Length: 81
Picture 1 (cartoon, helix red, strand yellow):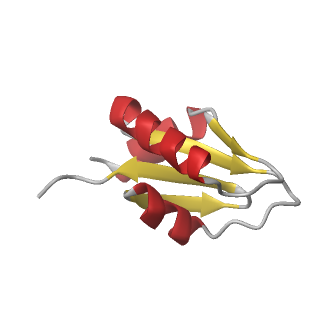
Picture 2 (cartoon, rainbow, N blue to C red):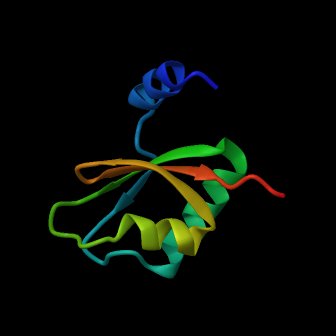
C-alpha cells in the first residue's frame, strides 16, 4: 500500500474509541478488539488526564500500532500468519 494514500486515509478517519479518566479498562480493550474485527483500522483518542501506553494497549488488543500523534493512536488488525 502506498504510504501517502494510507496517511491521507488515516487523517480522514474519526476516533471511534475514546479512553477517559478510568484509563485502559478490559472493556475498552474488548471494544477495540471488536472494532478491529469489523474495520481493520481504528483511531483511538485519549483524554488529557489519562495515562495510556500506546504500545501496551496495542499488545493487549492483539493489534499493531501504526502511529501515535499526541493523544491519538492508530491501531491496525494484525495479519494472521
